[in-house]
Length: 228
Image (tube, rainbow, N blue to C red; front, side):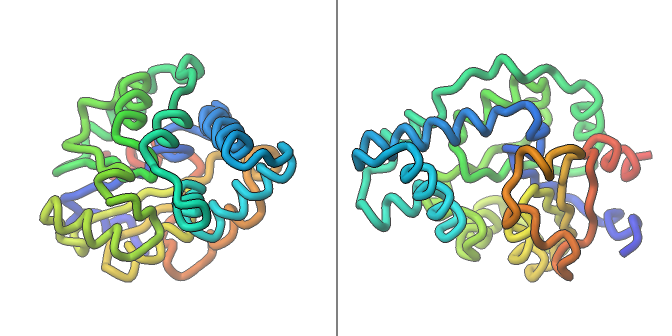
């Protein structure tokens, strides 16, 4: 697919964690640790078993929260508040990324399986928050995470988006399947150096899948090629 495919894009949709900032910051690792701690408190499991449950639910249900709601019938608000109470100091302003996002024509959105408050905190630290029209978080999705189709449909309906005039940026290939089927241009963001240290094998599958139109290891540089 040619880069000219983006010439008609008027709505730009970005995942948050490990997409708008690189996994090397370890920010999402803090959330992982908080989730494991929550599972330990909930179940009394060992840390090893809690980590296994956390990864298993994340893989099977899209988020650990969804798995805990299905398997343990937990209330989501306490979970979301607890796991997103993290230190954002590792994040620094990304002026290059902000400038590139700001030059994109049309509307820009954050679509995350985290909370709107978490997205605001992260985007503010990165210095890019003001470039976005809105943030669609897990509560706006009625607790149904990506990659479920109804989540994307809810997002599209809420903002009156034409999928065929949209682009989606994600760090997980599985979360690009539905957007691609809907007609969006899809971009997989895989920052260099994350394969061996920061990501599990299943998270890295699919970069050559037919529903992934482009792969980049540098989001800012990729966006710069679109705006000249």
